[in-house]
Amino acid sequence: MRLPRPVHPYIVLRLRLAHHALLQFAASLTSSMEIAFFLAGPVLLGLLSVIALPGFLAMTLPWPAALAIIGTQTLLTCLPAWLLRKRLLPAHTAAWLRQLPLPPRLRWQADVAVASLLMLPLGIAYGVSASIWLLQSPPWLRPIAIPGMAATIAAWLLAWIVTSCIIARRLRAPRPAQKARAPTMTAYVPRLPRWRSVFLWRQLFWLPFWRNDNVIGIQQSLLLASAGAGMLAWLLRVPHVPAPLLGLLTSASLIIVTDRGDKAVREQIAVLRPSLNAWPLASGNLIRLACGASLLPALLVLLGAGIVLYAIDPAALQQRVTKVYAITASLALLAIVGLRRLTARGRVALVVLSILALSAIGSELWN
Image (cartoon, rainbow, N blue to C red):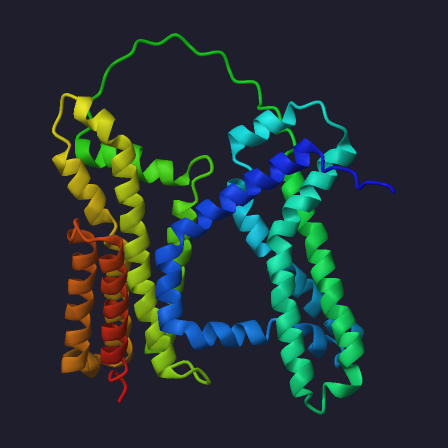
């Protein structure tokens, strides 16, 4: 009897590193997932049921459109791997693994195994969604059920290959930096910045959120863009989209961009606290400035909403519901940033109640 070959220790190591990174990511999203499931649980379940729909629809279209749909579905399926690539393989871990004397075949097997940690849950979601559609069996699906299943499986397998390539690319050696110029000898003249707190905030809070593997800057930019786009679509009464849904998405974006920004600032303050305590200067103004800066994205969206509303319907600014929405939003944002001793559960409750309150007030805006 032939015994199965044991798994290579390198593959086991890579799987454990990826599993640990995914657990850390899940822990960091605990509060956000609670908010999402509480506010949009039925919507998320509906999205799960239609995840396999593009593969079936592709079989009802001409081949150029079908290939475009399958390609788009593949890219969207690979999006989690692209977003999590720096967590799965941090720079220092990738640099260490790169030095190990291992054959390329073993490295590729490890990359495929790590990709399976991301793709197998998505494969289960695809299977559940396809089963729902096959059980319902609408008339348009019956003639193309088998080709649709084949297209769905092909898109998932192609996404698995692309995900493996994304992870393998992370282990490539970085390009050599260009040769720097020889420093010129100049006299050093120390300069004290005019606005010291603003200068320190930029150096200690703004720039670190954009450097190395930190994604806070990109995250806040995307949340700010979604909040601005949602507010603009809501105020302009975009057709074919229910106004209460736009109000809910806009209110949620306003609160979440502030919540995520304040959380990132608190984590950065905890990292800098030992150094700040050792500096011969008072850090209170710097900390207050950093906390207050997390309010700016949402306040800018509210200010822009006031300008747009004044341009399209000046009378709406005089309505009581508009003033109540602005005051409630401002108080909710100040509470999220100002209440420093809230527990994690209390913070989730504050965020959820703020979103629900703003959505209820905003639903009356166009009535």
